[in-house]
Image (cartoon, rainbow, N blue to C red):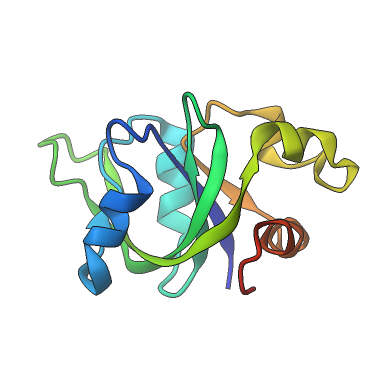
Length: 139
């Protein structure tokens, strides 16, 4: 299993929106960055991810699971763009903010710290475990 981080502006697609989709989940559509798209192409069923609210909150608010591997993004006719489907798993008991992540030396190499604009990014197993612990989430 691999680990990822999915960023969304809560005013566009929030954790509550994701939770409301239930087990059916939702496409992680609208990504128009080649690196983020390529990360989605690497994802496998059952991979886990953090759901991150960007903009004002800048915090990890829950975990998700990949429930459909990369397929054409339904929001465009351009076949260069693909997406995965994800479903919500667990809400964070404590949101883990970007400031907390940046302040934690154990997370200094995290992609989020060094490229906070990338909307889909990998997370190492060690980073996953640390953040799950900080957020009160099951690993």
